[in-house]
Image (cartoon, rainbow, N blue to C red):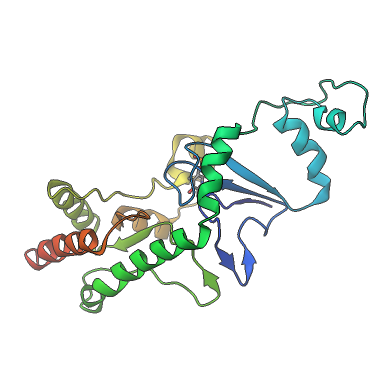
Length: 230
Ligand SMILES: *Cc1c(COP(=O)(O)O)cnc(C)c1O
């Protein structure tokens, strides 16, 4: 299993770190994530049998790592690959954040809990659905979403928020309905739940430095819209 743990850095499932569940796990440090280096990511190699080939692929398809370790007298091309290693500057930028891993997580957790608390009444009134965190999952609090009652309501609220200066976005086009998904034959079976939720889901702004005042404004805009559109 290759685990897409792109935004799962510092998150856990039944006590096991995401990225460690499959034979290989991939993290993203893209600028939209919790811990960023602009672009790039990390590959977690959880099974020894993948280690050697991963080194080749990272190093332009060469066995250069064996050369720098003195295991071969010159390096050569042994596999496919590219220049996947991040630069020193990129690493330094990222390290500064990894040193504050828990501080960043705590800011995001507080912001996530703020939304959940503040929107609780609307959820209790059946106007929207809030995310649920099972007890055996420790979240990275990468994103916060709400689910509206209909696709039309989601679109109308999204536009209302945009008009109020709040960028809320959908997330995502279901993969099986994308051109590549169809090309790979993934549309043979309907996925009605995925299709339904993707049309009703809205992501609210969540970033490490968001303030309670900014979140209060987002929630007030949502409340005003839903109150005036019965
Ligand atoms: C961000 C993200 C990706 C893409 O990560 P990149 O570093 O941009 O390649 C893939 N899968 C998930 C679940 C993500 O959140």
